[in-house]
Length: 144
Image: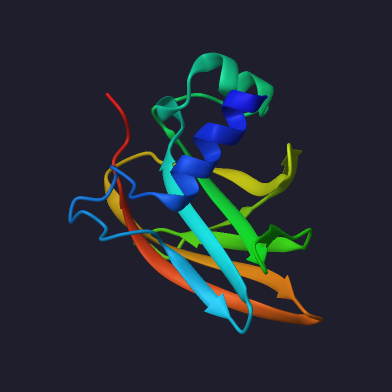
């Protein structure tokens, strides 16, 4: 599981290689003293043993969204929910699961990626008794 932590941390905090227009820098939102980091990628970027350990389906047609919440430099346990919408406005709910490992906490969910297109993600995160919403677009490319 240590490799899972390392991969998810890098995936969450670094630039994803999936966007056609090259995302500039890490993706994050700051709410007061709390920072929410997030990233998306196709699950084939995961090594088979890492995907298995995280109970993720490794497929060219499965995306992964990874969310972490940091307050005062420490990972936070929280509630994360959300959805992803395609260009035809079909919305798929995201079912996040918490992964806790060696002082890190991540929330991951999978979603289908049938074709290249831009998706709209809406992520809800409970922070300090309030739900904060993050919305972003991401162009996704199913693997080969």
